[in-house]
Image 1 (cartoon, protein in one colour):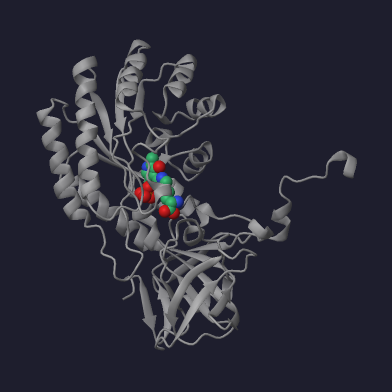
Image 2 (cartoon, protein in one colour; image 1 turned 135 degrees about the vertical axis):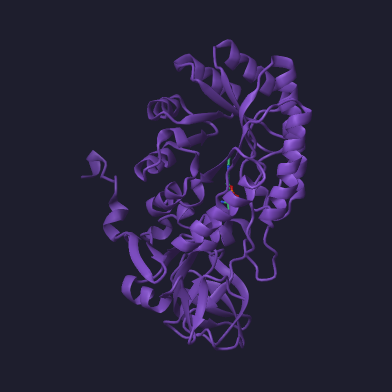
Length: 426
Ligand code: LLP
């Protein structure tokens, strides 16, 4: 079953009313294609699910998933806020038209220069260590500070993306958190946020329920000990999407039923008032909006395997190599043909790990066939590289039959950016 934005039109895969074959012809491959309709729909789904259960909510789009200016602009138009993790993401969010008040920065291992940049930009800051807090307070006393707690419960699709619990570098543990709020208050900070992010790619509700319980218990202790109340309680992102055809989507309606009721109940019980609730979805908004188109270069048979060598590798989509992630792959120009062969789909990089899909049952492939790698809208381009000195692909935005180039394909000249010969080599 294809996601509904992808359609089989006479054996050719369309996205949002546009032929992928035409896109590949016009713009070349590899090519990232993003659907505006899906981005809007996913944002609205989440917004409606959350706002139907709680009055004051904010959706901070986690820009790290995809920082294309067009994607950011669409979300700005939808009314989103932004979760950013670097000065670069703040810069891009501002360039795409977000006002600084709508940008929250949640860094880790943050430098003084970065703090100065954030202060000059006027964005809100979410603190990840007492070290960072002390350095910030030496520069200024912000009106608002949020602090990230490690709620001791983490979750995620791979150990690399679990961001809470004993093995995590993120957030403050409870006792330090109390100290941090105390320090901030003593410096004259008057408005506070409480933040967590437990991990990424979570498809069930239980870990959120456990972590929210812990978060609010900790929040109660802060409130009771220091008489601090929170303007913002932000439960982070991590809302998963199905990558395998047989996987079930996270039920966002059920999530809001269960988790928001729990939050409301505990806020009341603990006397924490009615803070704004923050959510930081990245993948949930953009993963399913994007595909990566890639042409078949070579077909190779060994005594053990059949390989389709394509023009996209882990330079363009690192998730399979980095996390063993599954991305569904379809043959965009053979949608009516039945699978009859098993292929490993291999990229062009000189690394054995450059495999985008193992043991895929597909129609018989030929050179110049066009593959579509699904769910590439999140952590695709944003994690891409020029490894093996391959310029990065172009990116297209499609919307109900329209398409536009929103990021040009890099050229060989781009490989020279910033480089010069050392003077003694000239
Ligand atoms: N908020 C914070 C503080 C985060 O660190 C992250 C992700 C998010 C929100 C958004 O998480 P999402 O809703 O997208 O799961 N490269 C990995 C994902 C790493 C996510 C890191 N932090 C992947 O491709 O699976």
